[in-house]
View 1 (tube, rainbow, N blue to C red):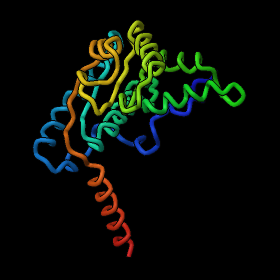
View 2: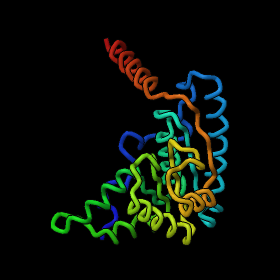
View 3: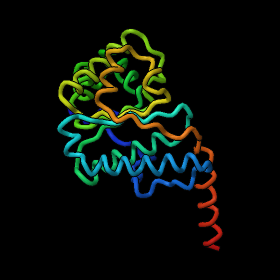
View 4: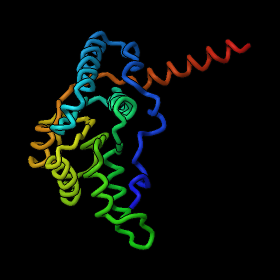
Length: 216
């Protein structure tokens, strides 16, 4: 199977240009949020500077905030882009719900693009896997088992996995087999409890208006 055919193999188009150096701290209005982001960016730049060590140990990241729209996805996409740009490391990106959707699609033998085993192998063996919105899906036993298989395989082979989640580690709604492996193989980073999604939309609209007015 050509693993590039997996629909979620790449960073989403909306985040392909994101890098840590252009991550907009000023979009956060709360001083506490800016302090958290400043510290987080320092930690993540250090993480990237020491990436060879993390590749050897399989140490990834678990970025969490209970607030939706806090910028977690933008940040983890930035890290993925930095890995590809600086170190030419292959990175796959998926929301947890998309992983589940793709697994289900393999059960349709007449219309599937690849088998479930091929899909699971691609997720388990890619050098870096980003799982966005981990834990937001409704978790059935089969979902828990599939994610355990992916995470355990990556754990055994010391491959980097990065997660974003609305759940602190202790309340992540997966069983202890998964939580213990995620906890052992990631640096856990708390993100601001401030939604900036509306701020970003407002900022983008203002920029567009300035460009339009500047052309007149």
